[in-house]
Length: 283
Image (cartoon, rainbow, N blue to C red):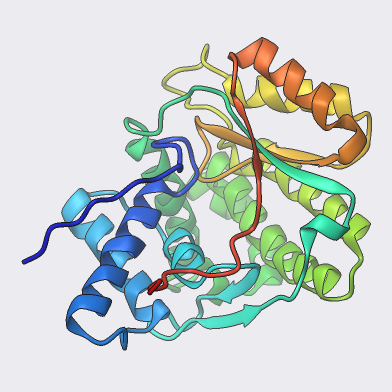
């Protein structure tokens, strides 16, 4: 065994992958103490997801664990879940004239497991309609051809969430190409499009079980009012409660933070940097 002293600046239960960060730390410690740091970041991420799915009981995907374990700007493809494709992107956000700001709307993720489960369940039901395990195996044209029958046999919301899935798969690739080619304005356009799709189709901005608690839509509205068509603002993380992500022009940062702090309380905003490393040992 061992004793570990851990400190963290990651907000808990706010959509910033606090559980994945903790899992990556523990995996890295075990790799360092007992395995000469030979356990790959990918394997640590897969083990972390297993721990969260099986022992904590939250049916999360692998993206948060992989991002924490690998670090930096990365494009992830989970077609082979045991050996995901990882593409590092060499991009320096500080040279764009924008700041990445996360706003904590003071919502809590801890009791939203049913909402997360419903997203995956409904998408799996659409895939099962076509005899497939997951939506990425479904031909999108066949999906559109069969939409009326899917709507009747499953639900309207399942159809809309599948549409979000197909669209965001394209947008993720397009965002990667935009960053690789330093087309940051195109990247921001795609971020906004993805956020709008999350709002209208994925529907993960608030819980239907708590319809009066809508901190995320409120923060997005306030952010758009300040940005006036500049930058980007959207739900961050798994949604339903928690945080909002915004790319804010440097000359609007003070105004943005001031308004968000006024609405959600002092120190609600965090100016982020993109950590270039994942789980590492510092000697």
